Image (tube, rainbow, N blue to C red; front, side):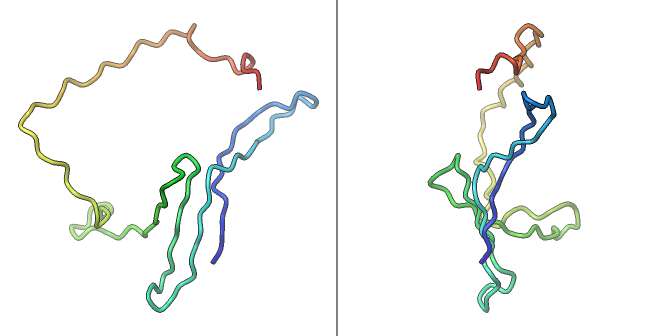
Length: 108
């Protein structure tokens, strides 16, 4: 068994040296279980801090039988069919540059 940290990078400028640096924040863990007789490839388990009560299992994507793209997960089900028409697509909100966030205004 081998454990990994799941991390995301964020760039910042060091106030003392004025140098751009990268901070790595841990957002979860991944565990690789060694191959066994029951599972010759081993298993992967992903735990993300934002989903505290959920464990994600990772599986290798296999080629589709029709040869196009990747096969969907075996547990995936088609969404239920509905007789109601699809709602109109949402129109994107207009972008106002005055609404942009200036990172210098963030107090941390």
